[in-house]
Length: 107
Image (cartoon, rainbow, N blue to C red):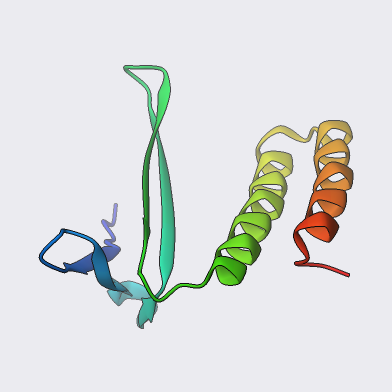
């Protein structure tokens, strides 16, 4: 059995607002900086989702809109891989296609 780590480094200002977000996955040879992150974990004991949502002051509203929209779409892909429920996924995709148009993040 092998253990792998993904590390996140958050640099904050005097008001504890994120200034810099960095991540590293040594096993994959990846290391980078990002403007926003959403981390969701399932707490089996509490039967609930735990989340960490962070973004830097420099991230624009338009970037956040696109980030949000893309997250919903990729969550839908994950949902299909985990459940095989294409019918629900297609409803979410259709709905978010319209939401994305309204937000101005897709044509």
